[in-house]
Image (spheres, rainbow, N blue to C red):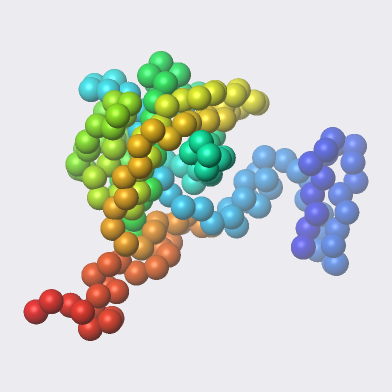
Length: 198
């Protein structure tokens, strides 16, 4: 194991555990370390009509259950940040294992931007007006409660106004730079249990 100092990396001496080499706390090593943190994949949607956009995140977390509140990070240079700030609402769409293409589109992997990221999927509108994905494992319709700008990113805190639950399919995870799945799709589970209809 390698221990990296995160406080004054230029002056602090990292302390190795065992015989592992020491690495300074710089952005590349920090990103490499976080690649080992598996995360559920969600698409954040914001805006309305032709002014829709969104992003793929693995950093979503619950902040509070009472009141229901979530948070995630967004880069200040992201095209989604001004839309979130303008509309003050967003959707959280928790993806299942078959929705990798949606995750890729909202990550902009093929260059899709804005409303083009919504192609190829069915969307409805939440109470706040945010676009919500049909067929997701779960959907949260949220109002922006606070935007906290720190360094290169903003922490978005959202109050949940509506919850929609989908099926019992496998979850889409992101780990070590690639997609993984957790669990079985509902049809696979029914087949394994001998419940498949003839």
